[in-house]
Image 1 (tube, rainbow, N blue to C red):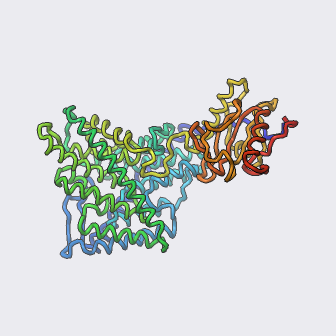
Image 2 (cartoon, one colour; image 1 turned 60 degrees about the vertical axis):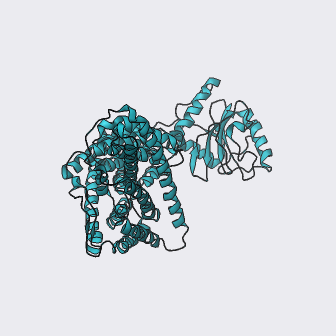
Image 3 (cartoon, rainbow, N blue to C red; image 1 turned 90 degrees about the vertical axis):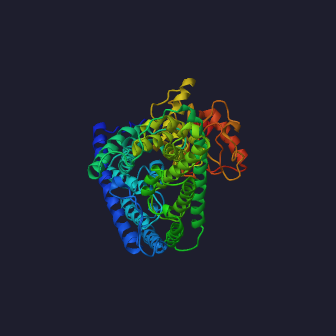
Length: 588
């Protein structure tokens, strides 16, 4: 039979010592990047808010701030002009030099990991840093983790390019850099390392290969930032331990409320984003309008301005009533949606933990009034609400628990943290997430498509077929380009072939288990052009027009199947790129 014979390629194995050394180097840059970003943010806040607007929001004591709101005689009335100016400048930076730096940076890192081999342009972290410092420093609502993650991830990508590393090694360095930045900025090295392994997927799946390099990077970055700012938790919270199991049902109820709040935030965030995307105007205008909206809201509700960590510390000190806490939660949702959804630059983790803490604190105060005999501590509910809210919104229950305990030192609340975080995660559907570049699980990532394709072929050994140990993607790509069947065994009795579904093909819209396939033919992969990804088929996978199916089966069965596919297509199929010419029985 004519065709492309499958060759076994030896995988390139990275040197463990080299990867650990590079992870340490990436951690150094992430730590220094976190310090530089904090300094830029402080400078931007001094110029925009303090000097121009005459307003200084409360600062975090652990970072040298104080919990006092300082106002000029004219109050906060100049804040809307300053937030609009900051949005205009940030929008110009982003859309003129690096449009991919728009929005929250963690999502861009996930997209690079799954779909771009970890490649991030060198200018992206630089533009992201400057634009985020201006957005947040001028009063916009955003988090610091997005730009810091992109600094570390971008440097990891640059190192991989300079050393000509493989895509797999590049991806490890990219995620190590993100872990270093997040772990350093939140004083949560273990949480940062776990976060990058967990946030890639919407379901409970983890990128375990990244964990060790991520830990090396996060520890290094945290050590550098700790030496500069001091070690210990980021927030000061009451030290207490869980000792009232009768309150667990109330924490379970908190998880439901947190999940509902996360759902509202996600819908609001992407609703505002889609609303702005429909505007027919210059892109740089949109962040300015978003900034203006945030500034106007901030005149009446100052808690929504800038990063808000000073206000968060005050929540832990129980300084607000439950009504004010609800206003903070909803107001922060609106402000973040307009700041980042309009095209501004910043992260969503920081606002997310403030929303969760405010919501949890409000619920805790209500419970304390309703059940005075139970000894409910509202601050404990604020701490647990932080983790539960973000666990549901970001699909990261485990890392949310660890990060909150490291950020606040609330290790004594692990039991309610575990209960509420995982319940909140389970309540919200996997598709409801702040990070749209997440994929459901490892099997859905193009990064691992070849692994599952190889596993499918190995399963064919039960038919007595000698399957190679490795099925490299270049051979699959060549199959799609040439349209020739791939011979899997020397006798030519088993072949791999492709078929592209046209717009009107009878299989379009059907699920895999509904196809009338010969018993010896297996669909091992679906190349989905519309989404630019590889879909590893399951029984419930629904086919779409334009899908390219990769099938494996006996040569005689493949011939019969191809004839039937041509008949169901309604017209003779043409060979060429993306389709396989119907194999001639005489060639088999």
